Image (tube, rainbow over all chains, first blue to last red; front, side, top):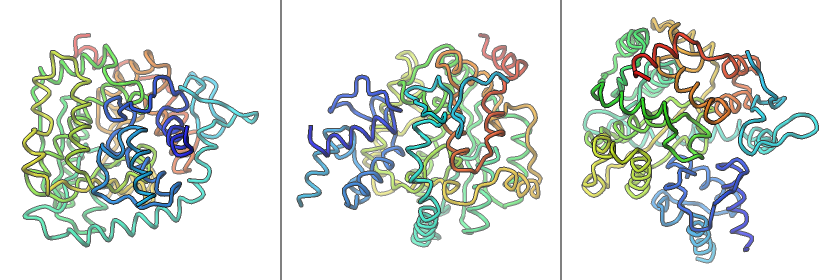
Length: 82
Length: 336
């Protein structure tokens, strides 16, 4: 598991699943499964900004970037390399 | 009061999912929040500045209203309304969902506050048979995913889901750029206190919420959600959500004092965690029975940790048994 993936997973499990990761797959939709709601997304964004020294723009707050571990990792990798 | 083993700092109980205590009886959530609490002062100042900037950019530009406020008549939303009106001089539409369990005292408070602040107010009331079906179902079963239920009861989640959808729908229809909520500092974290909504995110969120309702209710519930066409036709008008109490000073007694100057009175017919809803005691009791912890404990524990509520008050709010007559009143009305 990449360091980025591990950090995102740990953050989601700790902050939204309160330490119980049962069933959280890399492709699990945070919104569909009620793990994170639309406002909770901003907690995740704040974590990404601080942890990876990036700035997430308003127009980037879309499910394609933030709705699963896979999506967040892909978004971050793209963001960091661009 | 029946107090289980709880965190020595924040009041979360041993029954809260995933909780771990150290040798001193302090929970893992308290330890995790330590650095955020240290930075809270700076963070609050930053968000105050961000809200000032946002308001400067939108104020006076919309056709009629600068902000729509989800207004329950309770203490926190009344105070938020006052803040937005007196501190920022916004043109506000206060929006109340009458869920058929709003205390008469809360309705009196709504009238007093909107009149004192000279704010327009609108009340939206879905028919009682529909609300009764929703509340009967949520009293009998947890229809939402488990992570959602860590922070609120099924009943509250259903009701607030309708409120959030209706205020957003109204904001889109009236081109209102700000949607305000009176979330307490423990209810929603500061990081989410200012958010630009967008069609893709809201569409998926709404779709997940709708799907949580039983299939036989999906048709009738849909009319209270954002119509599909709005995501395209209103795509340029999606507002900012704000909940300013996350970063303004919050002291429950001071808030009540300030509100009392407008004639607001704390209802005596609601439970310890609500200042407007007569259904809350039943919702809490059913949540505790099914999940083993109080649905408000996460919020109140956050407030104790942030020192905006003292621990004894938090314990009283959470570990006082639900008032039997309030529970019976709701059960009787729902025929359950």
